[in-house]
Image (cartoon, rainbow, N blue to C red; front, side, top):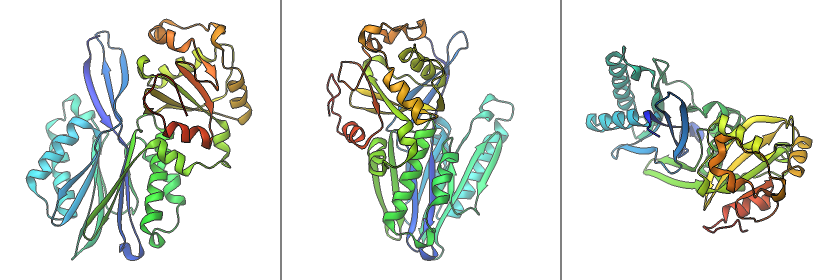
Length: 361
């Protein structure tokens, strides 16, 4: 298939200052997913995961310490980052102005071009002895330049709306320590990954302090496992589906819904929420997160997973993975597909997955 009009994009990024008078520093966090959207010769739109390990945090200046996180159109954000390095800003405010000038010129120069529809931006954060800690956000969205100087909590990208519930429900930012602030931002990124199809993969958080930064990166499943709450009602409505990476990822809402229909051909009205998508790749498996409207619906779907001998129907759109899905079983380690209910034990098993032909934990 010839791919025309390819577009790579990435989300989500969030950040905030914390500690009394912001003296503890700033937390910045990003996911690592890059998605590829493209059209074929017949103008059919397709989406695929390009990477779950993309680096989206960069240093703008080492003295003083200034960092940025990038989101949106990958090609354009790299051009903007290169331009900003050439301008060598010496403060967060200067970096914000450079980014603003770049986006203004981009909008002017591409007013009559399809490139004007692209969305991209960055969070900029750093420390100067004279000004203390600062964090600013700026992006181009729907042809408008949006700058964020006033909000204490900054968030950009398609997953940012899902992070707000976690961020706003957190304790007072003035009272946070490095550990509690890092936990908050990891929880917010995790929620974005579980709700937004374009967020996922590795999660990276950096703590910017007076002398530089401390960086930590964890796989989304490791973060999920750390914060798993067995008392959370939503977990009792959740199933995980694993299938071999030999089949290739099933990605995008229509493809995921078709996959679910194939696995449960005998169940009508499953009671699914919109939050059903591929959240991670681990070892030789792709891992889908499937949420039902009620615990009863999840139980019914789990019990009614077809066995190896049920011979479910596969539409032509999934003919390429038919041999993998016909062996679908419950709570077993057959070669290709595994359906399991959300549990601490399952998550720990997923985190310990190694490259092997079968699921083992």
